[in-house]
Every structure is written in structure tokens, then in C-alpha cells.
Image (cartoon, rainbow, N blue to C red; front, side):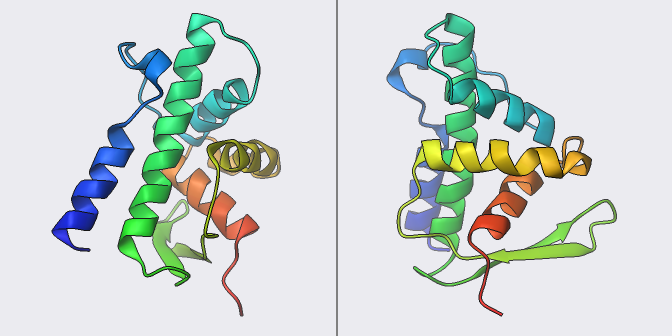
Length: 139
């Protein structure tokens, strides 16, 4: 990754929606936290706590996608290794040209119920496995 790409990915990863710019956002670390925040984010509530959850989900997903886009050539497969309980699993996905926050959040919340083992693992693993399910690499 170039320095320019790294700086761009870093900048995108820390950007938050204007409504929550000054709020203290909780850091999402587990799959359960990601699913919870994204479930709230898909709702229509404008409650202050819901806006914070929405911003947290948005920040996490945007950072994950920005990191992938900055790491691989457009349309190239992304292989994520060291997943699973023993860090001996991998997944492969190809991001679409455009992936909206709402679409990715919906995919996470739809994928998660069938994969309860991921709730206690990293949020990154939940996100990567969601992408692999929805945008698999060709065989």
C-alpha cells in the first residue's frame, strides 16, 4: 500500500457523520457489538444513543472497506487470513465497485444470526466473513 493510500484509508476510517462528530463513540471490537450497532443504525430513531450507535457502525464498516480498497487493486480478490478460533481459517471476497453503508450494515445483520460463533470473535472477522458470503471470489 502506498503512503498516500494509507493516509486516505486512515482519514476515511476516522471520519464520522456530522451529527455525532463531537459524541464519544464506543469502540466496536466484537462481532456482537458490530451487529448490535448496525441493527440500531438501520433503524429510523433519532435518539442520541441511537445516533451514536449509527455513527459507530458507520465508522467501523467504512474503515474496513476503506482499508480493503486501499490494499488491493480494483476488482482484485482480497484474502483475509488468520480467522477462526485457532487463527487457521481464511476467506476471500471481491468488493463491488460501490458498497453503501446501509447495504453493508444490512448484510451484517442478516448474516450474523446464522453464525452465532462469530459474536464473541472480532468485529473484523464478522465483517470479513459477511463480505465473503455476499461477494465471494470466483472458484
